[in-house]
Each structure stands twice: as C-alpha cells, then as structure tokens.
Length: 352
Image (cartoon, rainbow, N blue to C red):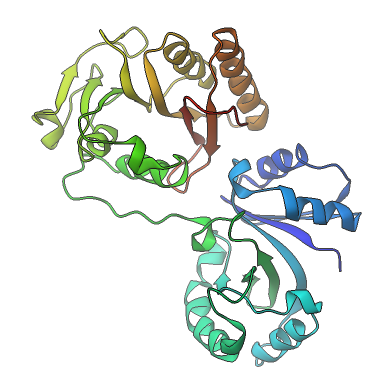
C-alpha cells in the first residue's frame, strides 16, 4: 500500500486544506475529503517517500496534524481489537514498531467528537496490548489510530519532529482568571504554536503595542508576561486591563497610530480586510517600528487560499524592498474561526 498523507483540519475547511497541500506536491494522486480531514494518496510511491521526508505540519496553514496512513481497517461491531491487531501485524517490518507512543484520535467534527469517549476508553486497552512495542526511546515513529467512525480506523505513523506534538493537533489552553475576553485564548495558543522560542522572545520589561485592543484580551497576554503595552482602540478596555499600571490606553485609530520609539512586539486583532491588515503589518516592519508581530487575517468565504497568497506576497514585496529578512509562520488555530493567525519576526532567514 502506498502511504497516504492524512491531514486533520477544521471542519468546513477541507477544500482549503487540499488546495494548500497541492502547492507542495510533485505528483498526481487520489483525494478524499472527510468531515474534518483530508486524505491524499500519491500515484507514485516515491512521492509518498518525499513527502514523508520533506514536508512538515509547520509548513501547512490549514492542517492541524499531519500523519501517514499505512493501513485502512474495517471494524466489526463486536470485535474492534482483533482486526486492528491483525492489520498492525501485517505492516512492513520497518513500521511494526517499536513506536514512541500510540494516540487514538478522531476528527474535530460534531460526529467525531462523539468518538472522544470511545478513544479514551479503548486507548488504554490498545496501549496494554502494545506495551512491549511502546516506549519514548524505542522508536522513531509515533503510532496514530485515527477513527473517522466506529466502523473504520486509519493506521498511521508520524515523525514527531515533523508533526504536531498535541493529540488531534490541538494545543489546549485554559481561560485565565481575570482575562476580559475569550480572545485571549487565541493569542495564548499563537505563542505556543507559532512563535519559536517564545519564552526567549517575550521578556519582562519589553514594550508592546496592541492594535484594536478593546476589551483587552490580547493585551492581557502581553502584560501577564511582564510587557508594557500601548493599547490602541477607540473602544473601552475592561476589567484589570482598564486600570493596569503596565497598560496605557490610547483612543486612536489603529491604522494611523505610530509609536514614538520602536517597540519589541506588535499584536493586531482588528476586523478588517486581510490585505489592509497585511499592508499595515508590513509597514511597521519596513519602517523598523517592531521586531515581532502576531496578527489575524480575517478570510473571505470563498477563495481563501488565494487571499492568503495575495497577503503574503504583499508582505514579501514590502520587506524585500526594505531589505529585511524575516520569518513568517501562519496557522488556522483551534481558536480561530474564519481567519488565520500569523507570526512575523526578524531577524532570521526567510521562511514561507
């Protein structure tokens, strides 16, 4: 069996996930879009090997997780363990283990979430059966058992260095006490998923700007890390963010505001046309007003991938003209809806 590339994504964005993956392919193949996942099987085994060797989930915006399906198993109503163990025993010797871990997963869809309890219960049974084949130092591969339904399971492998470190590809964050809005979870997740060495880049005493700050959910994440923040918004800040000594609230237009001195961080979560936001962020970097930024791009209902490419080309052209090297990383986070979140930073080699 030629390994198939299996990508988990937000339900409703399967076509966008497929279009993005197609930009990384060198061969044709068969496509299957499920509810919350995309399956691509290359015609050529060598293409599957290339993807396994070269592609990383960090390079993909709409994919939360990237694994390689090496078997597809139909399950009986009474015996779900036997067919699975049989399929594992029929894998090529180099894929039969040992594995570093085994994860039982399901799509993040309404139907898939009903499988959550089953995966937790059945996971302990599977782990017990495979105990002698598991261990963090034993194998290169992590074993993923992906259940799109109770009647079927994809047996998958993943290279931990090229896949998400979180089950289902979702970095779980808790709502912090005192945060004025749930939007704070989005920036918290962005720091976990998008920002390399975030703890080194976010240090107490740094200065940040939050464009479109009200009611203060993103400002909360910055001040909780010890940054001093200029919160820019004509609307009111709420809770502690309205009185916090590290927050200076300026009732100004986020598109017109300019700091008196360069800052360390810019964050921006304004409801505006994505290309206008991309141009704004690019200007801040081209003029040297910030070194790091996290921002959202609110996507249209149609041609989302094309809009992303236009926004990234705009940033690329602006920073190229200014002679600025940068890192650009983007992802549709768990807490995103019709949007993606991006990290732009300098100095570093350019990445797209």
